[in-house]
Length: 309
Image (cartoon, rainbow, N blue to C red; front, side, top):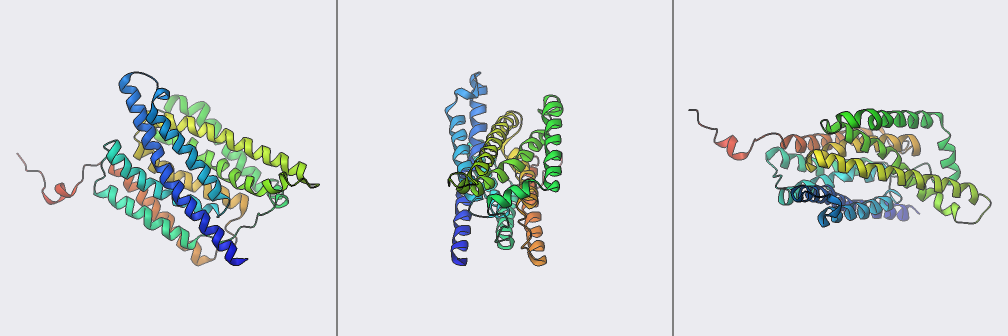
């Protein structure tokens, strides 16, 4: 039984890695499609490259769904750093957003931090049945957390996005990241509720309602994320958005998973410190990737400073 569990987690990690590379191409392809459409003067909905990025997002999300139901969310989510790395490399070729020294260092730190997170992440979860999930959904702490997230999303979407969205990237990033508090737990919850929902037993009716509720929540969250991701790409570079989005999304998902699934209960002090170091390493790496887009530091400039007149 233990070996099956290890094999299942390993399969989830493998799926998450593949999905990360697919997701890494999403923003770059969609941004390229938006630029092509802007140059032609028509809608990006008519651009084939944009649609290729959209289909990449769909396949990537399917992969994420499978990964979240075969491995702990706190293992799967940090592996998105690999998508940041691949996206940065792809953007340098497709969008001509070339990486300088800081960008390359950021990519290295992202990979290093991801490995640290996987090594120290929890290997078990406490919510494995529909009854346990229903019990968790009635937890006052969870209800309070959901209320705060919904309030923040309302403020961001209704008041801040129309006024400051195109000038402040954190508005769109905040919306998309907070929605991760619903998409990831919903994906995992569907995997928990599905066996009972379609088993035909005495508890199948309640499990089926839970399944449909989670499916609706997941669908609405993904659609809203999709809309605001494209709004962000219309105003900001793909590397800048993906880097900041990754850090905030990871933080939101880890917090939501901790509240809903109690994925931290089996983690010791040493593993907590290891995961903290990994998250800090990844965050620094992503920050360097973001900052590298706004600086002109290169090896050549370091070795040969500009001459004074």
